[in-house]
Length: 384
Ligand code: ATP
Image (tube, rainbow, N blue to C red; front, side, top):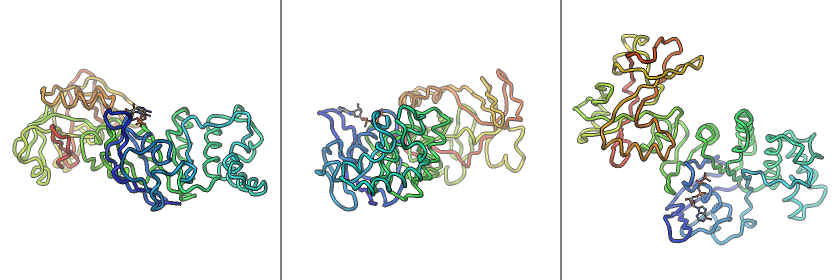
């Protein structure tokens, strides 16, 4: 096992914009680190530089304290699981798992023991004689993982290993990977663009945007204390609502009326005229269902309900708003990047399934202002 340290890593393909731009990241021995971000943010490139499949333009890559920039993939002793599994169709499951051991010239007796141990961990024992074509997607995925764990590598690297599976199987494999990683305790770096995987699998998550590291934190910290608009909009589903607001002392004037800030937040926005308020869908409630003493901790506003979605144990309401041009431009870029058009034109609020809101009618909502994030619209920085 080994820690992985990146110091000011840069990757340029040709003379264009760097695909990875000055990334410094410490991954502790035994840690499960997720690299996440939208398509093209550089996460696969970063992973390929760790494993040695891509040259590093500048910066230092250390594995177990040793600089590995010039070392070949084989010398780094890491195991990588690819998106397409890369199984050999003509070989049995046993031989697919055994492959790296055969390459290393391991004795037959040792190969047998190690493959069987891996097959036990992954519940593949009864499939060892089959060919990959006769396995389900989930079983193939486990064979690919078997090949990774049989080698006793210093770290596991995963590049979107679940993206070819259907939603149900993805859920199952996610839990299996988490369990396996905990059991083996091996340093793991896992690339995904799926924020559910990012939030459920890792000890910590590194969020990348355009090659630049935005924030490295535990899933909870990312959700509760995103450092900027980008992280706030990327983490959480449905996404955080962003409302334009003007600062009026300790109140924020938003399209949904005035939000009253607590002292800490009021101090943080002092000196700003225009800001963006971030409110998660779950921080709203149907005001008619909120008790009096709780109301004091938030603000109540009236708004038109455009569409409602009832999901059994919860309900979403979509409420349109209009924003001034300065803010719309900033939110337009962000929503394009995050693939979320609703970000600048409507808010999504999560309300009790019992609530009797009607589409096309006005309703009263309560919002918990103790949870509000306030962002600088120019830099995107979270001021709170
Ligand atoms: P995805 O989720 O779509 O795989 P990613 O976050 O993994 O995206 P990378 O594949 O690391 O992103 O790519 C980062 C940037 O580098 C992109 O702009 C991509 O077009 C560019 N890039 C990647 N590989 C090469 C290459 N071999 N030559 C030139 N540019 C490349």
